[in-house]
Length: 375
Picture 1: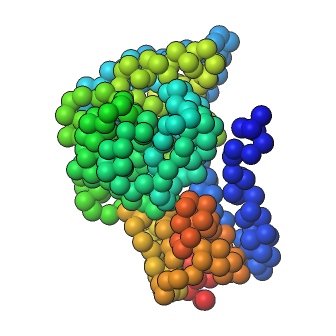
Picture 2 (picture 1 turned 90 degrees about the vertical axis):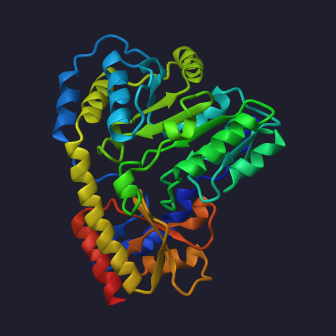
């Protein structure tokens, strides 16, 4: 009863409503850069695979088809520098958010267990901890915190939402080493769903490293999970298409619970995921599109007196007034006066920045840039 009546915070996006109304009142309409939902068409190769698998009268497999799991393994080898993963250690999920929300509970964490997550972070890391009865704790130095022995799960997010921060191999390895030196078993889960959207060096050339990278793991995946979503790189947010991969024993435990709970990705969606993972061309095209929007918005914000911090990868700009010191809600209000809706950093544990999504259509992005230049 307590879980449903007070353990969770209010849903943050509801508090943005008055600012959305203010932005809609602009004579040229709202430019919504708040949520970050894809707006570009789902690639034909993905839609065709979905349609071809639409005659799907039987129950799909919870573990995912052999073709999908092999496509994930091949993609990690080809795009993430992680060869030799075990297809049995791949598990499709109904989007990545449900896994983030339920992983602490699925791992059996509860009262007395601490779940670490980045200080500026997607709120669902916190919510998932509370759902399990565990204690969420923001930390930007998890390796040092792990010495205390009460941490059961560490969430990493690279590239980060909202700030676009990227963790290098050495930083990832430090967390893995600390987790393995802990007096209790610790799971390190890395949310990597923006890894294909790197904008700055060295990540554009070297790629964003994964928690499963051999340079991080030393060839041992024990206690490690990588979480990935195709929503952004393939414009399939409506498909709820994601997966987790890593430690075979951990994945087997998750699979067993998900079988009992009926947490299954639909068969046609599994076919679409397989096609998406096998085709790099549409991802490159989408990256080019987001890169163009990013350059335009970044230049416009900077010309209007804002600083863009971090934002090395991902789908967002992490923005604040250059002079500093202004509350994020005041910046939301300022931009809503221009008809531009953004998300306050307060949603993510930061009181100064706002998060600006790159996911509006080109015409709306150009309109936002024009309004900022005019301001």
